[in-house]
Image 1 (tube, helix red, strand yellow):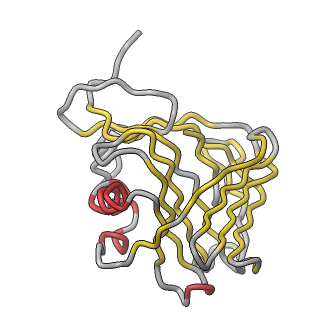
Image 2 (cartoon, one colour):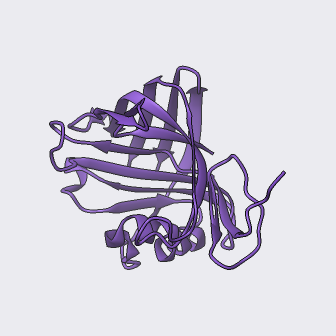
Length: 203
């Protein structure tokens, strides 16, 4: 069985939600959730989130600030350059999950004053995605992950549902979505030896 020659820098889960008021419109809600099982800064959870409920400004909720800042300096900062700003405060939070991945999934984030829920439902057939570092311009990291298209998504903030929705897409001729639910992630960095896994892994 062949192995990937790159070093795995993290493994875990990175489900996200991107909502917009109409297909192709600017995103009104963006939420990137991480459940890290392994990385140089330790395990933990973090949510990077902005919507009309935050006046369009990023908020960060976490139970491991060191891991949160490491992600901003590496993979999350690569995915969205506006999150490279490590002056954004980190709010202490607790995290829980519920559901059945065959049907729906909910992540719940609780801080002292806020409750956020992220839900994916009407899930489609999973796709296995494997890219190498620098294969996509501007992407220093590669990834091996399973993406599950979610036809329906919802994010609530203190009981109020945020505006917008996800929209159908196709990927390689298969049904997809603007908000797929990535089942567990890992990745290697260029020039280092390392194994890869099916759980989301960045390298």
